[in-house]
Image (cartoon, rainbow, N blue to C red):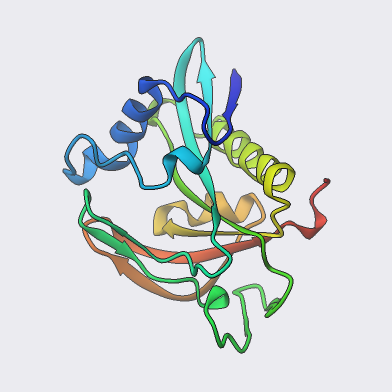
Length: 191
């Protein structure tokens, strides 16, 4: 098994996008090309290879200082809501563990998207290696303080096992399904 990290602006092989499509878009009936997301050129991409085959993928991008993480995906005709803690006027809230999400010191912040593992490679820890590499590179490149993501309900146990925590109510992402927002404080990760 080999983990590969590509920084913003570095070339990403077509096979990475093919696997991303097969895992995340094809099962939803989304068209080829929908696996490419706005901001891919400015993101960190990571994948795990097994015997030269890409088996797990993921990406992280820096959320703009005034951004709230909301997104509309034209190709997939879906939209993700904002992360409330990144919105102006956020007054504070607890996550599902009872930890208060801070109102300051949470930026620079990253968003993790397009995580997935081919069925035949699930349960081997590949996605955990991809996620860990995205976190570490985000801290190194952008001095990220926190991470944010919208998790499909079936993926929540995976993210929780990797130190992420749910907050807020469940919501529907059109053409994708039910999701919950999650966050992680990178304060305790080694720099």
